[in-house]
Amino acid sequence: MPASAPRSAPAWTDEDLNRNPHAADDKARRVEAMFSAIAPSYDLNNRLHSFGRDQAWRRAAVKMARPQASDVVLDVACGTGDLAMAFDRAGVARVIGVDFTVDMLRLADQKKHGRPIVYQAGDAMRLPIGDASVDIVSIAFGIRNVAEPQAALREFHRVLRPGGRLIILEFSLPANPVLRWLNDLYCGRIMPITATLIARDRSGAYKYLPRSVNSFIDRGAMLGMIADAGFADGVHRPLTFGVAVCYRGVK
Image (cartoon, rainbow, N blue to C red):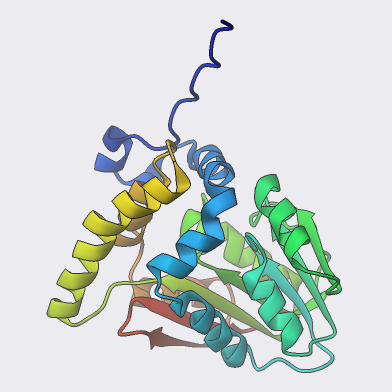
């Protein structure tokens, strides 16, 4: 019998996650490997483990962006395209999705079903987009996965036209202590087991998820980072008891 192919090393081991994953020198490589591994089951796990709220959060993000019919939207870290499609359904002029995980982009392209969305490979910190060329930049559940979030925010500012809107949708921690305890139990103990089984994942993705949320900057620091990148009128809206938060800034 032929020898079986060697298993690739996990993107995130327990030892890695005992430290701050955001401080890993090779974070970008690990994140790309992780998303490539879980791409086929990504949407299913999102729907199941958010109890369907992930789509409601995206609709809330689109609403906060105040899209107009003439707007060009750039959705960064677009993944399988759910937020890009939500913007397209809102009736904007054009949607561009950028992600650095090719396996995610393939799924996004398959899902668009004739929608005039353009997907392309690219890095959030070095966007393949011209200066002042889009009206809305969005990123959903992706800013914490970027190796240098501040560099990405400066890129978002660069590609936005004057008056353009930045929308960041990200996981957060509920302020209520009881809700936070329940959220920690679910995200830290239950979800990693069930999501890993569904995905048949060996990358450590669903152990990374709660650790990356718990060790990421808080809401005040995020608003400060948005302001430091040159955005004005920074606001945020907690969603589903603060499990997720949507931020908006204006160039």
